[in-house]
Image (tube, rainbow, N blue to C red; front, side, top):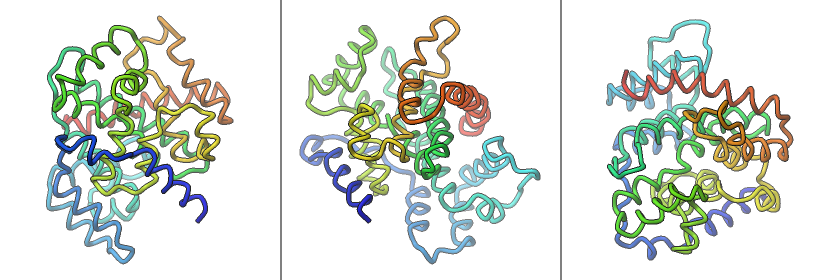
Length: 296
């Protein structure tokens, strides 16, 4: 109970009063089937059949579930062809992950601005979600929460570039030119950053507090998260994933891109070899998941 009280406190801190800050800001719509699914899974008495019926209402979501369950992410020995069986095998938490993946790939607008590639953004988001899920195991943390938090951590960026380009665009352009961390430039200019804006969106979508925290705190320093006693939780797993380089970067040309990822991971108690193996394994899983959610 004490831990969740802390989460609630930090969730409030992370989100701030965005109702006022973003009074003219358009929250990206969550697809209806995703909202229904997330609401259903909150019910402790929900049945597998009820969840399967919701999934079957949207053929795209149902087919992606089956392809995801049969992917290397789960490594099941036999092919699964029934949605009911898939829900039984992976559980409701993983179904929530799928719903969020679907919301991300279907609901995000492409701002169509120079320097931002939506396909690459989604690829990187999936990659960091996979890493967060993998390292959560080393922290004995909730893998599903880490995956969703990792996937959602930068969700505010394309929305800010779409709806607020005249104000937000110059900050994003400065980030591209200077290489400085985006959250630092945002805080200097606005006194808030995309991490906090993303937490606000997650709150508007009625996500659990732990996910609001994971999104809102993912750019915080290791020592700050340690002071909060969340550095080896799902929140810490998302923070570690945030430091992983873009999977399309050529690390052989510049291995220094891994430094922040390795530094956080080793401070959190994971050795360098394991961290590098996790990075490489996550890239392999990414290839398969990308084909699923890109509809290939």
